[in-house]
Image (spheres, rainbow, N blue to C red):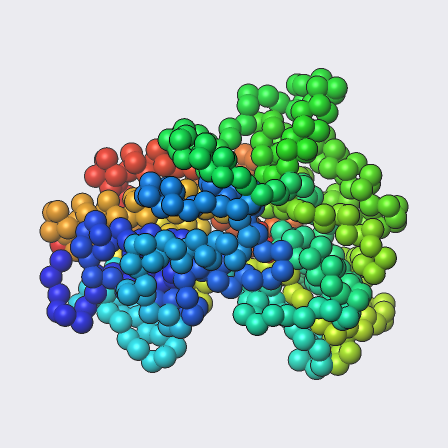
Length: 537
Ligand code: NA7
């Protein structure tokens, strides 16, 4: 593509798993001139920001990594079954160094505005430091869970102690020793952080709004032998992941909870519980489709909670009852429920007795209970999937703001492109399988697909591509339809639905039908000449 020296072929926003791989593909495969703009001070994305104690990936290490380059797989060996935050960060730095990526990344460069210029047919991208970058393509690689959700609590600014959000954790050590700490939130993050904070705190108050299901992770060290066996068998691991709906190396057997005898299903659940991890849900294939089946599995977990937590009143408070298991992102944990057996850990139900305000000394509940604290940790999640995109003030054709285009919920074609936003791609955007998968598999699929499309354009002398409105409408309707065939939209406060952020439209955002089916569909779209896209010179 022809343009002057200052104009880039592409700007990629974000230097996490997606941005790094997209940079590599465009530079090495298409010889494109590319810059990555990254708000953080280094590579890592999610793993750069989420440094809270206990931060760990729920996908297994040897699957939560790039598969596009055999050397990267061979040369890196993971130390534990699930990778901790620091190890993932080291891994991404290793990849960035091996592939010589950092020279094309501008760190501490937060995008504040991106506008499509119809005359030049280029994107003008402004950053917080006052720089403007110009490029033919804008590719967002901002992650699905990167815009922190901070509740608006009256008087919070009066609080004299320390305040942290898990998604914006400081780089300096946070000292919990001898402190009274309040943790708000019991999603995946809270469930990881609470046992770790409890190890050091003098007193820990957990403010729980919705009790959550959680399955033991059963983390453990990985041996050199494991790594050697894995390397021998990479192709089989890869194909298992590609065949699966979630990009994990396991596939739910053709087996339904309801149709399995009580004795047999108990045996299966017990074995899956002992094995630990996200595959627990996959031990039957109807858990997210059939209410009765789901309830049997949910009840199994409730019994586990009752038998783990010694204090019956506390155990009952921890029982999830208002949503079916798996309809909110299911956490996996290390000693989460066991932590409530510690004398200095107190569980407070803020659904029954909500947070009213904050004073200089701590939290005040609606019934006027005062919880004095030295520190408040918000594990309150994210404005998921759309938050980070909308914060960038992206303007497409005729000055249309992305936030306006998505007023009633995100509208995308394949989760990859948005009508009226030409030459823009959203890696793992709303409407794609993304957060329902083992992310690196979804990311590699998106990046490969975008790269192929750009190659197709270069080869034919095209310079502009835009999703057609009708195709995006049809896709968005399809995303909703397939979600409605499952139990997933039944969780009232799920971030999948945007229901955790006040005022956000309730639309089920990720694509439920499975990464395997999604990949086939995207391949079909490519082979058919990029149906649903308008591609022009
Ligand atoms: P989540 O899963 O959105 O969890 C946030 C938690 O914070 C959840 O328990 C919320 O309760 C609670 N919350 C949010 N706002 C409030 C207020 N105002 N008062 C009390 N409690 C509140 O975020 P995570 O960071 O744990 O996990 C996000 C994803 O990261 C995770 O699913 C993995 O994919 C990785 P609620 O359930 O809404 O009642």
